[in-house]
View 1 (cartoon, rainbow, N blue to C red):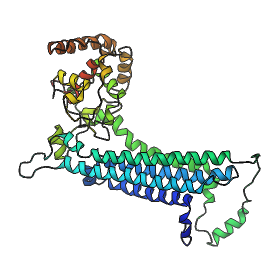
View 2: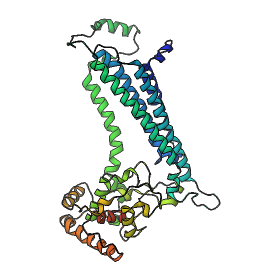
View 3: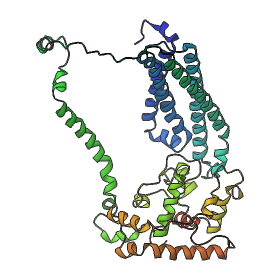
View 4: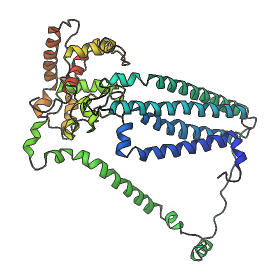
Length: 425
């Protein structure tokens, strides 16, 4: 500790360590707080989570890493740090950058979370029904985030420069030296101290049995892992129970939808759109009925997401015609004037890849997804037949510049299937 040595806080290396420890404490306090339902209802899917994560990433990991480098590099190369002044400048830039970045995300998350969850008690309707209205309100905080990130990055480059100059300034031959750890106390002395109560616990018992210690730790980890993983692996049993006939209520993705889902994952759509409608009244009013286990039981990996830069898509299937999705993917601003979503013009040029869909369905079937042998064997013809149907629909809507094997076709198939895979829908 630095108790009684507070003057050392003037040293930049100590400043890095102490600030990193404080931000680690803040991040670990945040984590349990988000497990409280009311706090999670406000914070989840907002920038609050981004601020929380970067308190640990930029603060704890970043500052601690540079603090260790500033301490170790001079010792390894047997030379003083090139510039303590630059190290101090680096620290202040990093601290200011983290402050701007982290608190901008905290304030943005609180502001958007309150707006998204606001319901008019007189009418029972959303106060802000338009998702983009709530996002545009926090754009200034994102600009502050960019400023903070730039300041932090400037400090990073100064730190790298300082370390490189320190290494280059070393004049020693840097010959290897041999060192040895101090000799351990005789075992008898330790046992006597333990029996006499001078040490509180015989740690040597663990040190003597590393294999047993490793097995015990591994067992504890496996128990926690099994508790988390087994419900997911046996989800179908939870759903169907003693009524196997209900297995036919929900269908897996068609071959074309599976191709579209691969495109969705490839383009990183889950980074901005969730597929998880919570049971909160505001979520249900905004997006539709809350998600159930059946909605994602065949998704590997699931697409629940962790941040909503755009609205949730779990129930978007059938909400808009195919033509809406075409216009939206070509130019989002043609649908929503101030949308921040990028355009995806290559989806209208690239040809969809059907070569791997059969193998994909085989693996899904092996994992328990109820594909028939026939549907797996006919995956490619089925995908092309479904693509032809969608293509005919969009031709009828006046889009003559799109062919049936463009990537936009399977993506539309996937988007239109969201929330619509219960048989009969």
